[in-house]
Length: 357
Image (cartoon, rainbow, N blue to C red; front, side):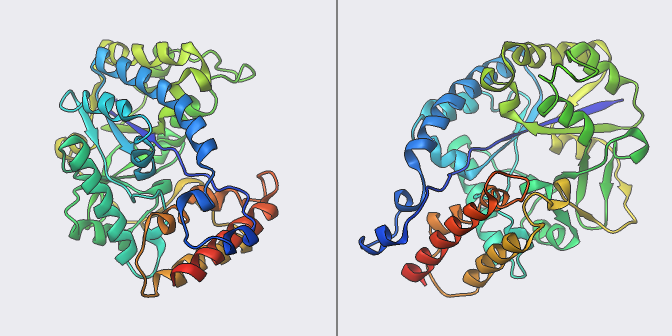
């Protein structure tokens, strides 16, 4: 393998509270704390913030080349701990790229009208410029969703590279830069990404324990120009996998160097390698969106969001937070109490619409 793109998602959602409409009717105005459990959100963020800062120190000390995808909801929660933004800002210009995405970690790219998607992408770009002084040219959509319609929209917005979902094995031919005639894109190697994110601490896994040396050897044996990894940055925190995950992260750069594999940002990979023409239908997404758009209640909620977007009202953070993919995933039937979650979020959305539309 000639090169590797190492991409990290850094995201914390605004989790809804259990909402009783009679409480809402006694209050005059909609607010974030009326619908969202801010005490719980703060307590979670306070814990992961320490892990993120510790991981950032490792990235800086080892000069790890990578691409970060920070969600807009993370930016908003950083008001509680501004030092987290400062720790990311220290990495700017040291082989670190910041990619754009929909601000609210939403699936607005799948709405028939593109105005809400465009609004959120511009919001996120503005946040990157405001916090880090960078203008992103790479895009990573929520749940790695990508298709030709989205590509044409991103092209108009000035993006030159996209990361989307790929396959599991070398035979899937995902280790290249591709172009469908709209915008160059990279496909995530799903299995290797999830080896780190989901299986790292699984003592029953046949490859446990996973070391940086073993991981890089797997990649070195593969064919292709550039392999793309995309995983949750929280995977490297002590809260998730313990101190061994930070050791794994700290050894990656040296191990790749020993094997002659270059680490590249997404923007650099697209510039360095000639894109292969992608002749098949471009329609990718993580898990085929089965965790967030696979049942009737999820589709009803999603369609209600689209209906509200067609109406004339001032869109605020509350409406953005109600679009979070994370809310849709709570209604997945594999999750605990999906129907209770559905009743709760529909109550919130209905009450919000009553006040705003």
